[in-house]
Image 1: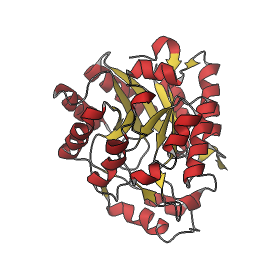
Image 2: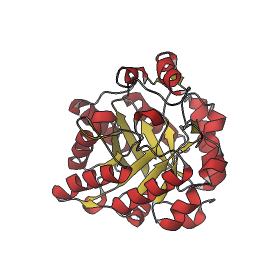
Image 3: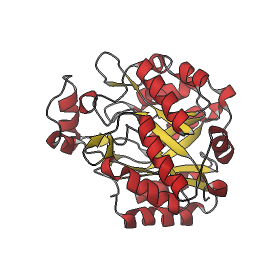
Length: 311
C-alpha cells in the first residue's frame, strides 16, 4: 500500500540496544528521559514511538516490564502517539525475556524480527574510545561472534503468545529472506493484513544501504504482499535521512530516532529524537507529502486503539 492519500507515518525509535550510553550524552536512559523524549518526538510529528527500556543505573538494555511501566503510562497520558514495544530487546537476551513486555503490557504495536542474523556492532569501537560503564566495550567487541536469534519457532511463539492481545506487529526485515519469512507466516494465518513491514538497511549482517538495495526490498515486498501491506524504512547511522527520503518518494513511510542513528548531520550528534523527527518532517513536507497523525496511523494499520492496552 502506498502512504494513504499522501500521508506518511513517522515512527521514532527513542532508545534501543544498539547504541551504548557513552556514545552520546543525548541518548535517553532513565524512565523520565525516555518518557520526555517520546513525548517530544510525538509533538514534533511522530505518529508512532518505538520503545526499549534501560536500566537507569548503567544504561544496560532491559526487558523488565516493571521498567517499561515507569514510562509507558506517562507517555500515554501526555500524548496520543501509538506506542510500539520491542520484542527484539538485545541480541544477548533470551527470546522469552524479550517477549515479556509486549506479552504483559499488550501494546497496540510490537516489533518482531523476521530472522536470525549476524548483528555486527564491533566497528563502532573504531569511532568511540571512552566508555562510562564496564558492559559497553565488551558488548560491542563481542558482537563479531554473536548471532541475533529469531528462529521460525521463536517467531511463532511470539505471534501465538500475543495473539489474544490483538497487538499488531512492526515486522522488521533486515534482508530479502526476511520478507519471505513474513509471507510464510501470513500464509499460515499467524499474522494478518495489513502488514506493517519495516525494512532495515545498513546493519552489518543485513542488507546494505545502497539505493538498489532499497529498490530490491520494495519490489520484493510488492510482489509478495501486493496491497496487503504498508512499507516503512529504517536507515542505520549516516544512512538514516537519505533512505527515509528515498522511501518517501517511493510511497513509503519512515522511521528515525536515536536507536537507529545518533547523528543529525555529518559529524554532528542529534540533540534529541525530536530533532530527527523535525528534520525528516521537513523533508516530507518539502516534497508535498502530509505527515500522518497518530489516529491516521491507527486507521491505516487497523490498530485496536489506545484504550485496549495494558498500561
